[in-house]
Length: 227
Length: 193
Image (cartoon, rainbow over all chains, first blue to last red):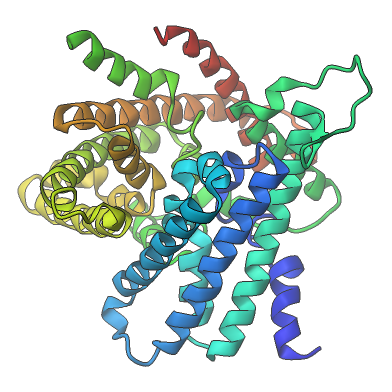
């Protein structure tokens, strides 16, 4: 397989950021109430991820190693601000639906994680493809979770009602507890099918493994507690 | 007025619980809740950092960003200020109060990337809170985080000994426990008067 297409496959299937690497859990839980919100959040994050990978890859020889994390944060935060203003101007309904979670794309571990693990070591074009692959993987996972919650909790798919009259949907699934339940079920099904996920990282280290800052904290806590 | 301030704390801690209702700070909530002691220490560190961060963010917004018409810069400014603040707090504690540093120190860097800190700072601005309201809302939110993580740690210490179906072991059962806690916390929504 061509190395650019390999990046796409890697992001969507092999190292799917949400389902396999278990990164970016906050937005996954929070905005998956509707499939459309999942798509909106996924694509906004994808846009930021592609651009941040591009910029960071272009600047990888300029940014001194010691200050790379603050530099990445500034790049990502600027891109998120631009994205937020664009969404506010052109997609006001999405802006209201996602609310505070748009500026919080800054602290999404996927973005800093990819900058640290991939973009600062590879060429701009490969980094962009990595961003596209990871972003699409994230969007697909978010849409899947959103679709399941919307179908079970609201009886609609992408806003179209499909339940026969008289069948009451289970409202709990579009409320906060439903988010935890759906993600728990998705991971349980993947476990039952024998698909290897990094859920251990999620519940045992809490550091998300790849993410630069979190990883640093992990090393430190391991040193101190002597695990 | 007083009535309002108390409501802000209760709302932050119980009604709009930051973890169970708003899904901020999930990483550390799921990761550190394995041990009760670590959870309590992390909770202490979070209360400390979020309260200070909301105070600083509120002052910065009211006296620098808003008068200069730069409020669109708030995301960038807040995240940098929070990251720097955590570093300063860490160095200060290390020097001045080694005992507290020993208890909280290892969790401080974890908090920088905790979206709860940035989330609270941004929500305070969005809700138009003044300085005192921001500090109280930050404090209430952080107390809510601590309640949630300590409760989950207690539940997990019991689950640990149960005989579970294999696919549910690990993350799924922790998430299901969180879901049940979240259902319980929905009951607090009746408190919003």
